[in-house]
Structure formats: structure tokens, C-alpha cells
Image (cartoon, rainbow, N blue to C red):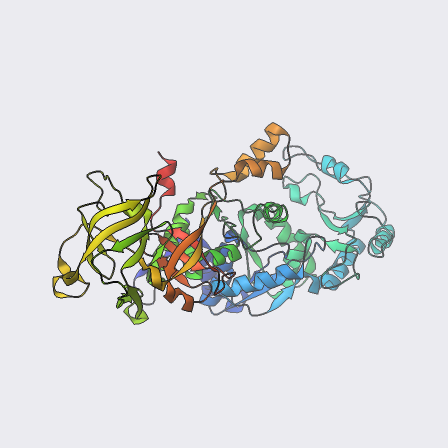
Length: 581
């Protein structure tokens, strides 16, 4: 059963996830001294992506809800891939999402304890040095249906393993020449019990410990013990770690050294990953995109990274709401990206400031409006939030409108500007289209209209019925801008599987396969756009709605002389309509 009901504070039934129900039950039974302690354990080898947001919401959210603590612990056991840049970025992303940690820890904080624990296992005959190659070890592990065979080094004398283990850390042993393996059961049906590797040689400087270590613990060996050292009660992770759980429990039993933990021990629980269509979330593949220049960086608004979503204009609230909507289960599923976009629209509708912007301009001349005259009109910042107030816009004889808002010869169901038709100019007047001017090639250069003075918004005759309202900006009171229209980076629904298929069929590398899948329409840059001059007052990353176009924000690279706006999401879901044609 994936969800249970508990009484909410106001007395109504509220559905909670199965993970939360476990926590509630543990608290009721008095386990772990009736406390909740979680941890979020990212490896600092890349930037966090939308998949990590689900784990963050669970780890930090459960600790927050049940008056516990959540620690941030960096899994820095592989110095060849880790960097302080990633540590700083991870911290920034967690705080942006709206969470904070009780303590910051690193797996490297426990390297001495883990080393001593490994020495203890060797002395107890529970670990040995193996000098086989990686291929030989993999082959002698057997298959899920066939038992493995013992390593020829499995019964190596304890003193010999101790001496070699020490040499692994002095630099005397080259990478790949030997490993330390736990001695468990080569016939176990759980492949992870077949003498797993717990230490290997890595000759690279560590971002925190420098050159002190040459022998580094494996994730399975470091993770559970780190939880134990810190006092974690609920070790929450994704479903691929289900077969690792017995090993997690065994190492905790070994490291407790005979102590009776009773109900006070870390326990691992697993939930489904956040999978999205049209999205590739492997940090390894995202790094390729960055290094090969297929995107502009980790924070490219087309990337699934949290910093990419932030730069694109997603709010942290929208991501948290999306995670809450899809929930937590014990089976993996592929979620539709449109669900995430829907959550973003819903949230931004309540917080984005409404402004006018024209991204494909043509001039509208109000022929009966006095030349040189200007009116100041009032625009509501957000009809959903009256407390956000208003701002001023200017109306004049010459305006910019969207080229799509005029057709010289229009079909019957076209209700915007066409000769003989009236439309309302947003926040201003009703105008009657009288025609257009063209250049020598027949291209429309100006649309002509006459305004009806008594129809200004808010005045007596403003309720005159028209079938369409269009937006505009005054030519003499606007700012030129660059608008970047972002769309999905991948043209295929499941890029991970598609990439694997391409690589197998063409015997090519990941980069070549990626280039075949990239959506050529993922970014369109429009240079000659116009926005209200009010936007000069707004800050980078402010949430905006370009009326009738979509949600946008101001790019951090924007300057007073070069305004840049990123499309966050369109006003409506047009992708699925195009896909299903």
C-alpha cells in the first residue's frame, strides 16, 4: 500500500507517502529515541538536477515536518571527479529550493574511522587483498543464477593482507593492481554479497584531504557507516539501492562491534526516482554537453539542472509543488514534462508581474491621435495579487504590436486587426483598423487604425463589446530587448534509451548519439524585440508574464544596455498538441 491516511491538524484526512507512514510508525513505537534524523548525500561531481529535487524534498521535508534534523553530507570518495565548485553549487541549490541543513559533513570526515574499520575486518578474517584484474573479479563473481567462485587470494594470510593494504595507501601500489574485498558469501543469491570491493587505489589529490590518501573506500562501504557515525535514523534513497540494503545492514552490524543497537540504528528505505520524458539527467552525460559546448554551461536554461531551471525562471515553489503532486512510490514511472510545466504555470500565475512585450514587431499608427501627445495609463501588476499594485505605461500615436495581430485578408474566425474590425488595445482604447502601408516588396510596414476616444479602459463607454484584446508598447517609450525562446533540448521522448540504441546501432560514442537527438528548435534568439520601459527597474530572475505570450524572466547576463529575457514556459501547453498532430 503506497499511501496511508492520517488525521491532519484540522481534522481532515490527508494522504501521506509510504515513507512518511514508516516515519510516523517509528515515532509511535519509540524507535531511535523518538527522533528523526535524515541526510542528503550528493557526490560533488556535478550540479544538482531536477531528479535530486525529489530526494531533497523528502530528506529535508521529513526532518522539518517531524522536528528532526537533516544533514548535508558530501559523498567525496572519488577524488578524480569531485570539485569545490560543485560543493558550492549544491549548497546554493538546496537553499534556493527553500531548505537548510543542520550540519555539513563529508564522507572524507570519516576516512580515518573507515580505515580503522577496514583494518579490523582484515584482522577478523572478514576482508582480504585481491590482486585479480577487474575483469577477472567480474567473471568469477558468477551470475544471478550461478554462484561465484572463490578468489585465489580469498584465504590470504591476515598479516599479508594488512601489509598490502598499508602499501595501497603509501603510493607503492599502482591503480588497478589490487583491491580490498569484504569476505562474505560467493554463493549468495544477492550479487552484492559476493565479496564486494570496499577499497581501491586512486592516485589523485582530494579536494579536502590533499595527498593524505591513496586508498579510498567504495560507496557501499562508506555510506552505511557514515550514517551510523552521524546517528541517521532514516536513510532514504532511490530504488536502485534496494539490492544494496542487506549489505548496508551487514556493514552496520559489523561496525557496531557487538553493541546492542536494539531500535537505535540507521535503516535504509527506498522510493522511486523522478524520471521525466524529453529529459536526460545523468551527470556524466550532462558533463559531456557542457564540455563539448552543446549547451552554454551547467546553468543553460535548457539543462535539467536546478541552476538551469532557476535561470530559466522556474520558482522553487513550483518545483516543490510538482514533486508533491507526483508523490513517492515503490515503482519507477516516466512522468510527462508537461506536468512540471503545468506546475510552473500554476505557480507563476500567482506571482509573475504582467507586462507588455512585442517580440515580432510591426508598427501600429493611430492616425487620429494627436502627434506628440502622450498619455499615462495604469497597468495592474498581477490581478491575482492586488497587493502587488500597479505601474504606469505610456500611450502615444505610434505603437509596436505583434505582426501576427494583423492580417490584411483574414479568415472568418480571425478576430484581431484586419481592415474594418475593432479590437481593444490592452489598458487603453478600442481602435478600428483602417488599412496598412507596404514596402516595394509587398511587406506590411505599418498598420493603420483610428482610436475611439470614449472607450479608454475604466471610462463610461469602455464596456463596448469587441472580440479581441491585443497588447502593445509605445514606440517612444519602450526599450529594445533580446528574447530567448527556450524549448526542450531533446527531440525524442526517452533520450536515455534512444541514445543507447543509437550507440549500439552505429557503434558510436555518447557525444555522437547526443548530437542526433538534440532538438534544433530548442533555442531561438530574437534580437529586435520591444518591452515596456518599466522593465528597466526590474532585477535579474524576476518573474514576469509577457501578456498573451508566456512567462519570462530577466537573464543574469542582462545589462541596462542589453536587456535579455528568457522564456520560462508558454502560457499553454503547445508541445503535446504539436507532437500529436
